[in-house]
Each structure stands twice: as structure tokens, then as C-alpha cells.
Amino acid sequence: MKLTDFTDYSLRVLIYLAATPGRRATIAQIAKAYGVSENHLTKVVHFLGRQHWVETLRGKGGGMLLARDPAEIRIGMVVRDTEGAARPAECFDEDGACAIDGVCRLKDVLRESVDAFYAVLDRYSLADITRNRQLLGRVLMIQPA
Image (cartoon, rainbow, N blue to C red; front, side):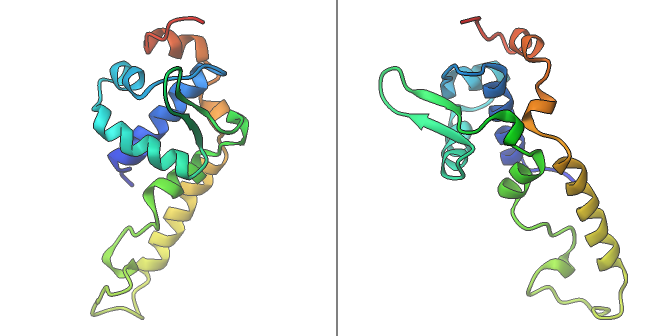
């Protein structure tokens, strides 16, 4: 299963924020660290704020922080939120028409594989994947507080 760029950028924002606990970060800082578009990240951060994954503060001294403890942020939940309903094939669409619908067993196999994919992601929290905060901070060129 290939994740969308939106999901990829969402996870990158959360990783960046987890690497700098308690410090506010700006979209510009995160975009520079990853070499990605500020416009794309603006949409991502807006979404993450609406989903209560991040807290955003406007104005001078603003920026964003994680809205939850990294141990409470399950990777599977973030991916579900950003990807939407998993549809690995046309037969998962409501209006998907397939000549063998009703007798095909592939749909069940695909559903099982998606469930397994999310089961693995659900085992890990943001804290689990950012235990190497100092190294992440160096690689992302985050200045120490």
C-alpha cells in the first residue's frame, strides 16, 4: 500500500514536533528541514489541527506544538485520518461494478491485508518512532533550545 504525500507530510510534521518536545515550530522551519513546499505543509498543518493532532498558535511567537503526548499518538490512527477509507481495489468503491462481484474471494484477501497493515501501524506510537530525538534533531538541523 502506498501512502499519499499528504500522509507522508503529516507524519513528517508529527515527527519533527516530537523531536522538539515543548518547543513551537513554524511551517517554514519544517518545510526547510524536509525540503518540501510550505504551501503543502500549510494544508497538512491545518488538517492536523482540525483533527487535534497538533495545536496551532497564530501571531508573533506562534507556531505549532503536539496537542497530545507522543505516546498517545498511534501511527495507525494518523494514517487512517489522513488516508481516509482504505480502498485497495475498485470493488471497495460504493459504485464499483465488477463482473465477478459476489463470487470473488480477492476482496476478502485484500481486506485482510489492509487490516494487517493497520494492525502493525497501531502497535507503534509517535514516541516509539522518535526515541532517537537527538539524532533526528541533528539530521533535521533543529537548533537546541
